[in-house]
Length: 158
Image (cartoon, rainbow, N blue to C red; front, side):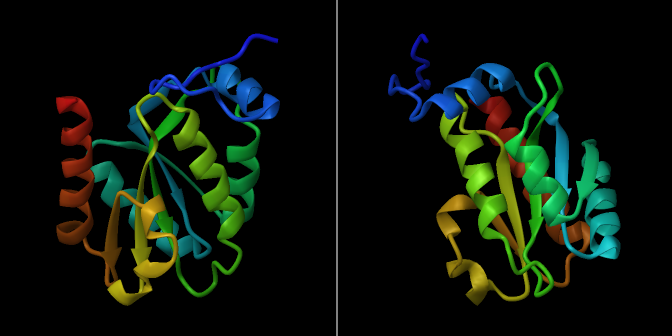
């Protein structure tokens, strides 16, 4: 098997990661967002706000998202942004965060961006290095949309 390298020139860690790297081809699409929330209502609200920022959204519960992130489909568009609602119903967030971190580690551009939605900004201690931005509740278009637009502008400027 040939070794795959990240943009920094370091080898991708394990053989499964290298296979996932080949399958995904690091083709994160900045026009797509994945909304992960335990609450169906929160998925709808967060998706609508992302759509106002001109993103095509898919939304799923944490269990479904962990499975989808762990088994990427070759050629399928990958989200360039993940909006992760860390509410109290989302207890098992470690698996989802691990899958996101794997994708970011093997992506040359460090994508997808991750926006965490939290109850309070004090909750950010939870793996804050895994997040590009954090938004505290209550989430409104006026609070989330500028964060999304700023991250997209940063990526386009690079």
